Image 1 (tube, rainbow, N blue to C red):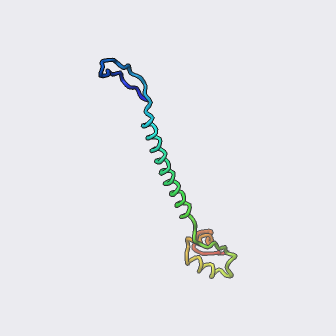
Image 2: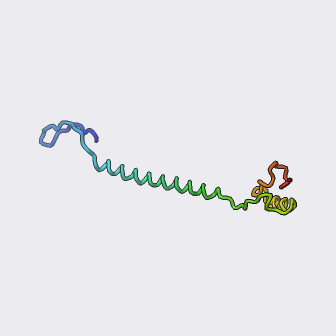
Image 3: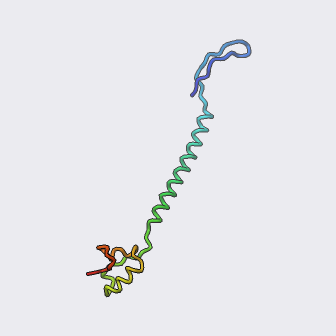
Length: 98
């Protein structure tokens, strides 16, 4: 709602100021806000899904018990140290010492 100031008509009579309802302006703003909120929601949803999908690992999980010898575990560890970092618990670059 807005306030309309008083004014004179063509015949010289005065119309006192009063409140008027601008329904067209109100509905126009509401419609734009809904579209804007939907767009923001979709952008946030896509961002969350892209982060959750990119955190998946392509590494196969291996334990020391999966290998028959330390040398076999060491060669697997050296092939990709980031994937098989769990084979080297004390971070001395020697896999499955025990």
